[in-house]
Amino acid sequence: NPVVAIVGRPNVGKSTIFNRIAGERISIVEDTPGVTRDRIYTHSEWLGQKFSLIDTGGIEMGTEPFLTQIKEQAEIAIDEADVIVLIVSVREGVTEADEKVAQILYQTDKPVIVAVNKVDNPELRADIYDFYSLGFGDPIPISGVHGIGIGDLLEKVCQSFPKEKHLELDQSIKFSLIGRPNVGKSSLVNAILGQNRVIVSKIEGTTRDAIDTPFKTENGECFTVIDTAGIRKKGKVYENTEKYSVLRALRAIDRSDVVLVVLDAETGIREQDKKVAGYAHEAGRGIIILVNKWDLIKKDNYTLVEFEKLIRQEFQYLDYAPVVFVSAKTKQRLSQLPELIKQVSINQQQRIKSSVLNDVLLDAIGRNPTPTENGKRLRIYYGTQVAVKPPTFVIFVNDPDLMHFSYERYLQNQLREAFDFTGTPLHLIKRRRN
Ligand code: GDP
Image 1 (cartoon, rainbow, N blue to C red):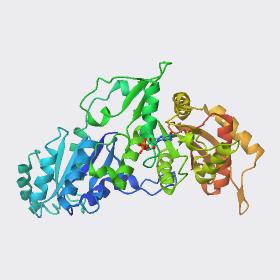
Image 2: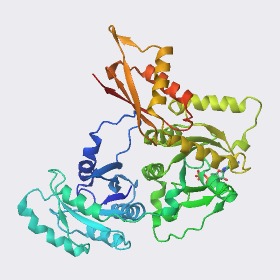
Image 3: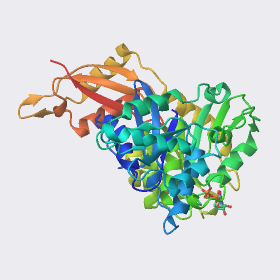
Image 4: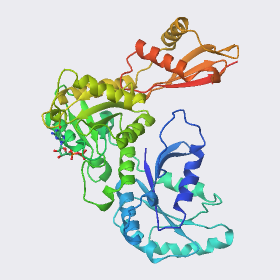
């Protein structure tokens, strides 16, 4: 999806506008339970055009002076976004801080759209012309609070999205490595690339794609490793902020078919690892868990089994993800990774014929009868697969409330026994049918 970033000095109403744009989408109830996201990144849609939205104002830079902060936020927007929306306020007119932000934005040739906020009534519309002086063309009057002009803004945003996408990158299997700092993500990327043939990309200039690296295995299989926080550092201050790393991880997950969640064998599992893994799970991507630095562990016959047991305990919702014990240093098991990534990607895109699916469901119900509540029994009429990536099934039932968590779990396990869904979450949607 194209990415839109909102920038601007404090108090112009960035987060109000972010929530306005995000709002429509958020009201759609999502099926997956999960981690609450820091609300600086969301998905949205305008007349069928999907995009991702970043509120750079939510990325706090600790004790940095405020002018430095807004400059850095503008730099993040330049790095991350396809289209930048600069929010200003009609009440104060053009301020020095607005001009500072604009100066940073002159450095990019990405489209910048000026939205003049707080135009709450028609009389104020005459005042928006001052903002031509910022040099980004027609300013668009909006009111975040009243929801005025948001449609016009989004229309202009969508018209500004880049048209072409890169075929070469699009046909390869995309994966990313995520994890907290120092677990060895960049060492692993380098080691994996070292074992394969890096494809020198013809694509230049698109900052965001250029740091992704396509490569080919000996078997001629094409992959692209997606850049994440902490992999190729540029030495910018904001790279060390927690929210920025979260943002980068979310972006990388979004763009990946398969996510490798990297743990550090030496330091063990930390709270932050669970958060990171939760994002990948919530996004419905294929997941493989890598335990890196395995070379540092003194082993006996049980070490590996014990460690895997611990992972299963700590990451119960990831029971579908294969675990691989690796070392970036000794290259242990790294040559197996491309094949496994490919398999998980295939599993994610598997389509099960309805007839076969319903045989499995019938069989499952036969072996373990559906639950009852207050004398009413859950009836399962029919199931059908409605999506891939991840495989998503709609199950038609007499009453969705009768489908208890444990029974849903049982059905998922039966599907996993019947088909190879290693590495991919499954989504079950219950629909009432009378
Ligand atoms: P990142 O922040 O996740 O990208 O982590 P780095 O790749 O920068 O690695 C952090 C530190 O761990 C560096 O000092 C690496 O040399 C070290 N390291 C990474 N992988 C391994 C490994 O498999 N074995 C050992 N012994 N050290 C490793």
